[in-house]
Amino acid sequence: MVVGSDGHALEENRRNCSRERSGVKSRGKSQEPPAEEGTPAREPVRTPPGIPHPIQPQAVFAEAKRCAPLPCSQSFSQLDLRCPEGLRFFFWRHPSWRRFSRRFWVREVLLWNVGLIWVVGLLGGCEVAARCGGERLTGLDPLPRLAVVQSDFVSTSVALLDGEGGVVHPHWVDSGMQAPGVVAALTGDVVLPSNPVAGQLTLLDRFGVDVVNGFELATGTVVGQWPTQLPRAQSTSGFRANPHDVIPWGEGQLLVSRYEPNLDGSAPDLDRGNDVVWVDTIRGQVTARFDLSPWDESLAQEGQVTRVFARPDRLIALEGEGSGVLVGLGRLDASFFSAADGLLLWWDPDTGDTEALVLDGLANCGQIKAAPGDRSVVWVVCSGDTFVDSDGRRARSGVVRVEMDPMNVGGRLQLDGVWYARDYPDVLPPSHGLVPGSGTQAWVVAMGHGVNDVPDALLQVDVEPDGSLDVQAVNLNGDNAPVTAFVLGEGAYDPDMETLWLPDTEVGLRRFQSDGESLTEQAPVLTETCSGMPTRQVGLLN
Image (cartoon, rainbow, N blue to C red):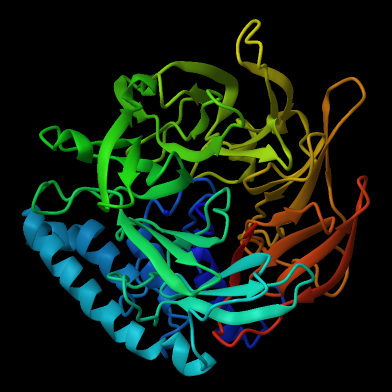
């Protein structure tokens, strides 16, 4: 589902509607019409980073209003009934509907039929190719350096750039693409993996489609579209895998982290979820799984016991034979409201050996990335508890630096530095968009407040001489400084060009030059796109 990637559709749509009503331009602060006397203030519905769209259907449909020519209006129970998100609220939660029907299947069938009709209608009006023109999936020479994901949470388009930000192709792959080997069209929940596959563009189409797409850049051909769960003929549990990351592992094999657990206890073993699975790229199917339920946890809360699932997120393939894989675990319950302490897991897929590092006092620590050129140093961002404001997240949010000990003296995973957001009330707590610059420097996005008009921030993390971590906000003042929340996405650092690239849904692709100590912002690129969709994520291709 960032949460990113990137999963703030409801709040962003609320701001857009507010601007339409008040006539405020998109770069200005959002303004709500004054509430009627006695009416409680409307609270925005937000999807916190680090949790990939836990309410993905709602986020997809609400953001779709930006594509469809629907007027904005006053809401019913905080939601517009002309929008599918409002319909879902009414059918699923509203007391009058519950009194009308107590049967689960009636509500669900009506809900998904309305949603299906809505999506089909919107996709017909959001055809990317009609706006961009030109052929897609053409062979490329020279190969691009960057892939940029643009999405309105209904459709997706991927632009390709060179190392200096020049456009190689404005929409090499998009939701309107028809090509041999592509069975399922790209949805609006598409992300890049943590690490590129040489010579390929790899895309994860997450919750609801659950496939890994591979495209060869030099020839413009589809390498494959690989499912991450069993076909319906082999499993009838209705499981959605929600793949979060993928890495190659041996000839013709991929390792894929499946974020969602299958709550159907009778489901086949290969469809249980909450695991890392082997996907055979030749046969196009899941062949084995590494069950992560031993790292689930039961939490006693208010007299009840809540099961927290491991929820594997990002993966890192460590260098050297027998070095294994690092798995970042989200450790959240089925509702995403309860979280256990963060945990980083080392695992050898060949032997099954494991080692866990518990991150006490931190939560939602699935975002992990290795330093460029040195995979013995790993950065971790813990975004804290979900569905709370920044102060609520601050209590268990932070940044962690871990070093791998190849000699395994005292453990493979060595906690080298921790920065706790709760100790720094003047700094926004980190939330998503982790970008390592080196073994001693990294950047991360801190999500702002949608209600109080506190904008997103970019934080720089440096290792001090004594080994402690120092976190400071990067100065983004100027015409392109964020003025609201939920605009900064997941960036990338190019060590060859010493350039940090940062997506901004309202500016385009921001560009910073690094001298190893500080950043200097340069002119952004992709300020206008033929797709008309905002920039969400950027990643290196080689």
